Length: 254
Image (tube, rainbow, N blue to C red; front, top):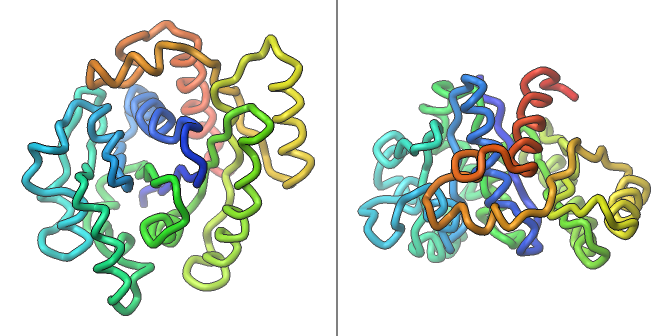
């Protein structure tokens, strides 16, 4: 069975999409069969992995509305993983789902037939706690929380954890928090280290290692339609994601 991870944080700019693309590529390098799913109407993951959302005939929107099966929409990428892409049409998906009984389970049901083909399925959640994010948490085994190592970044973590507890109680009792992943991390500053320590103490959450080093290379990668592991293979941030992937594969229940 696939290990399904939702990468979620309702705060924008914390490197959710970067984490999905980079971690997915790192797992693929290790020989894992990986599917990444773009759950954001802005379609940043889709664009970052080399597809133009405006030219796609079908997307996750069509899958969630049961127009086509997921297998018809999935696309291979140059980084060795498969992608279930998004388009701006996904912005209207929530309105359609709101009228449907069992709407929280739409994504889980849509992926049932193909999830077994993968060892990892990773969701790139939108920066909100709406129906699409609830769907991701309902379908996932674990939630990974990217967190920029700055004071204001952790203000929404408590709200996300409240949502996780609601999902555990109502739609997905097996969901667990994998941990917080420090991103845009500058190890030279005591402030960054203090923020990470505060998160661990305040919320009693595991902090995933290693922290992801801040680098301009992450901003440059989407223009090439590849992950940073391909565009700056020796960059410290790329190596950080490779180490994180190794830890996930070696210690799947850590």
